[in-house]
Amino acid sequence: MDIHEYQAKELLRQFNVATPDGRVAGDAAEARSITQEYGGRSVVKAQIHAGGRGKGGGVKFAKTPDESAQLFEKMRGMTLVTKQTGPEGRVVRTVFIARPVDIAKELYLSILVDRISGRVAFLASSEGGVEIEEVAAKTPEKIVKVVVDPCVGLAGYQARELAGALGLTGDALKQSGAFLRNLYRLFLEKDCSMVEINPLVVTVQGELTALDAKIAFDDNALFRHPEIMAYRDLSEEAPAETEASSFGLNFIKLDGSIGCMVNGAGLAMATMDIIQHHGSSPANFLDVGGGASEEAVNNAFRIILQDPGVKAVLVNIFGGIMRCDIVARGIIKASRENGVTVPVVVRLEGTNVEEGKRILAESGLKILVGANLDDAARKVVASIQ
Image (cartoon, rainbow, N blue to C red):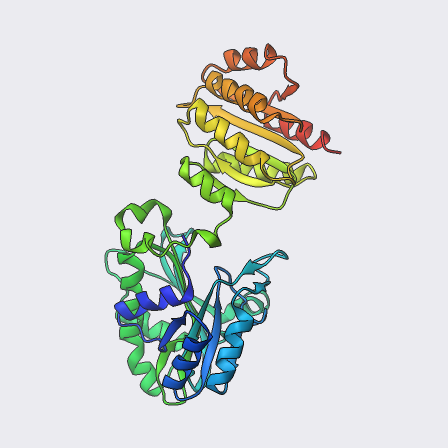
């Protein structure tokens, strides 16, 4: 789950991580008032769950309280398009007014789960800000990774290594140990999947502060954190993804033309890969889970077909806990109730597979059955060409 910048900064303050003052404005008058409190200048920031807001026009500097009010009026309700939103953009519903700081240096710092080591890792670079993606692509050696032993925590020598990678000196260097330890504590205690500070800045006054922050959480741990769930903004999530989560389905909308319904995240990734290998692209990631019911299959099918870009559907089920005959009945029910008009290709394997294939064959519906995953992928791609 993602949260907004202003919410992330609330958490940073709870863990004594320095970040500039700021408040959400409810209207233009409040934006003007907040800016007056900050000495007549402010940073007006659109709040959406996507990066690249500055380049898209979602971060503006107000030199007067009146200018802050004007920027608020222009910003709230606008459709903000960035590299991360896609061409459709996101509607700005919340505007954050931040106290400006005098920046001497922009840096990059993040914490995430390193898939190679299976541990939490820090990434640090002395070249942060809006061009960090370019740094990662062209000069990856400028990004330093420090992997943390969970039994030890962030060691002193590791904090010094990170400070060195960031090029910190003077007061900023003195502040870095506590800054890094508090950030690591936030990551662990709140079950985060990512904490990104970009940019991390050193001010002219020598203070180390998180100018911007992006925090994501492990969905599987949210039951432990009702205080984090209270931050959830459903307007920032795709309606289909929200609906799918209410049925216990893991669904992510993509931009392709072949809808996918699979049981198991690894199998879903393999399914998407083989669709691309045969010349098409997936319209979604959808994992119905290991023991999904007939009703869950029906709901999954319906959610896939809500996407007008779906030209065909590939169902790839390995029946372990989930029985293939239940999947087959769910597919038939969904096809009839939703009036399916696009080609449907099914690959079944595992428990009750022959029974599942028999049910599909006797349904009277135009459903193609793949002999294996490769055959099914070839058939579904061919059906839309």
